[in-house]
Length: 148
Image 1 (tube, rainbow, N blue to C red):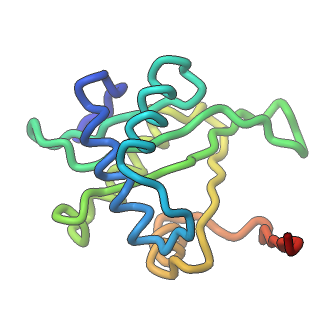
Image 2 (image 1 turned 30 degrees about the horizontal axis):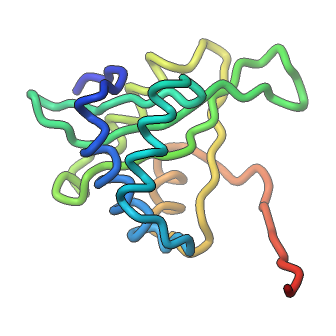
């Protein structure tokens, strides 16, 4: 498995996989593929988020979207925030996610650094995956909406 920066010719696949990810995690926002195309294209153009492609023998099997995120308790600790981590449906359940996370930690996280991420409450499979690769809860983000 290799990890490489996304290119313009990856954008359509990224948008399709992002749609899969939103569906599979039970995300409440109805985002269309054209909107996702625009989002990934914007990230590629601005560099606001790094997008890495997971490649196995020439097959795009997934992607990771991440960015530096200063650790609030100690700014000297390098941290990366994972916004999206997706293994394509047809490649799941065979260890590629675990391998991808290990590769990410080795190549994108500085020694002594940490990774943070959010996992939706509607995604128990995702929660179990992250716990299996060594992540542990740090805090619980909650939300409330004011009626219109």
